[in-house]
Length: 255
Image (cartoon, rainbow, N blue to C red):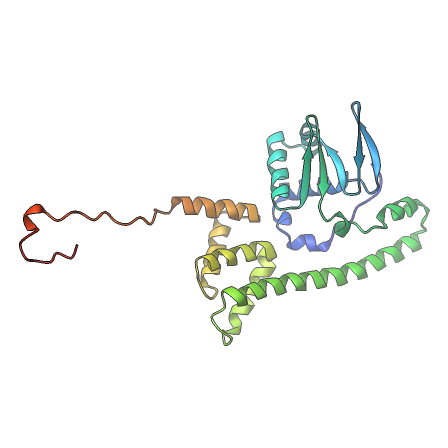
């Protein structure tokens, strides 16, 4: 397969980037996906593919990725659960769809790939400069939008009041740079569910996740489920019956 793909700088702040195997498999999906509608023959079957789709076999993918089949299966499931890809299985193979393909790859990419070999070095440089400018603008606006969503959630669910210390907002900015929007929002949701206010519980959650090696939202979900499972049930303590001989002694034992 010839041509090239785009890899947006926004990837640096994504949960995918924090896990090297997940990043490798996601990049594999981008590289395998078709840019144009076409038919692919698989055995005796013709498969209609749209931009952003490709035919997937776990065994072949494991060989190309130099990974175990079980590893490929697990990380493809992570991408599916996080709504990054969709999987349409058949009895022999699956068709993978990269969700939001048009965001990762602009619509004119296929035509541009056909013209790559015809472009002069000066033309290629001008094209690159335009891409850098457009990417910077998109990257800046998308990061600002994600940070706005994080702050909006914090203010609506965790902020103590309108006069809260600006230092808390600085902390959130630092966590945003370190953890990205996905994991930071996840930690805030855990704190909000516990009806905590301020940043203390969020800080504690992120500290625990860091010590546990949490890298993705899926890791965080598993950690919280395991943590919840280890907590003792909040059952009502056993209330013993009053001794028979004390029932009529005239004293109140508080039971």
